[in-house]
Image: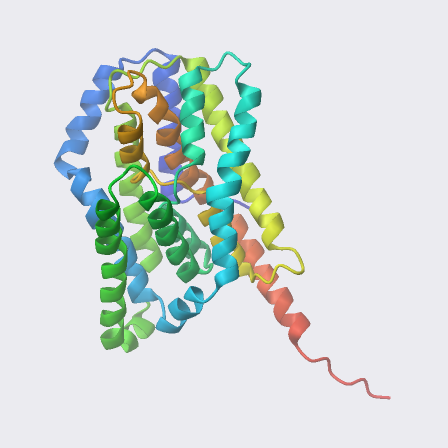
Length: 339
């Protein structure tokens, strides 16, 4: 049974607002002004890009044992699977799919935007938070999110030093500080068990809110309701299909992955970064009058991946727990039969 959390309901509300706005020809300039009115004081270019992401990884540094981080670093097979799926299979599959969609009446610039989504690196926040919410291999999720962003970001048009410094300051430094602080308050953490998951969820809500505002902050986006609904449907279909594929591949008998590994693989392999994605688009498509339309699929994909992930957290968690119990039972030595 699926239980709706606060962030799930908020994300659902966001999507109803998007569809309603276009379906009833809502005045986007008014919505833009409203978003900027509430968004402006938050200074998302600072609070989200640096403070929110840093808080997520400081939180992870406090909650994770050093042995878990070290073990995740050495899990080469998992890292190869995630990076190959994200950087090779994902964009190739999207390109093949778009060859079929090119004969449809969908706006060609939206299709180009979908192709750019496939080429984006993984995010450094949402995959980690959702993996943590399920109870999966959080350490592996941290490594793959940061490494994937660094690997693809450094090979793109975005300045290498900018990417390296941002990832170092928002991921590595907070994680190390969290680990150092943990050494001094380890007993207190184990005794009190602070709500690390709830803290991460609150940060995620903030990211989602600013993303929604950013979607409507450009009054020049001229998107008909048919194209919007089709793109939303395609994005959800792609995410569900790829999540199912990664689940199938990582749960084979000879895969060598634990249920906790599978959780990290599902989220890290299918999520895409908005933080690095938007700057990339602005550089690669600088001067294009259709830049706002090209950006729409990524602006939709980002909250979609969090909404879908939030909805699936209880289901995936239930599967992981039952699978772990089943594996534990099979490994227990059988009692000798008395004659």
